[in-house]
Length: 117
Image 1 (cartoon, rainbow, N blue to C red):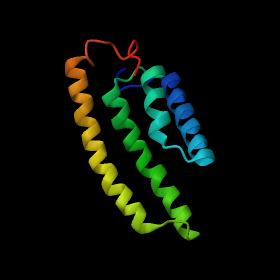
Image 2 (image 1 turned 45 degrees about the vertical axis):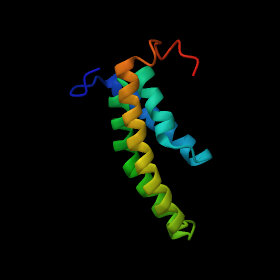
Image 3 (image 1 turned 90 degrees about the vertical axis):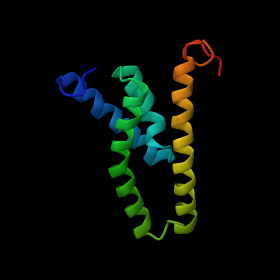
Image 4 (image 1 turned 60 degrees about the horizontal axis):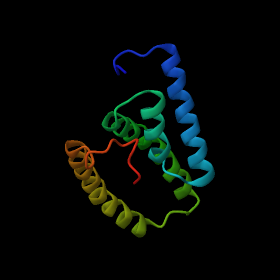
């Protein structure tokens, strides 16, 4: 799917994905990327890397609003949050590196759909 032009139907799909991710995030605290990336790859036919990047760009304002809302009520443990963030940055780099290696080896010769893991 081209990212430069989107038809109205595509725009409605993105709105629906965003609303769904926000709803699940608000109700259960699940990360938006857990919902957004699979939905973009399945329904918008984005390649995984494009879906991941798009999801990260969308999550920045979502997370900003969320952390401000919680912080105003004193519901943020800042030291653990910073430790989690630093570790997540390292984990993200490792995951990206592993994904690139998996793609170049085609995950041991299996497609992602037929893979049992």
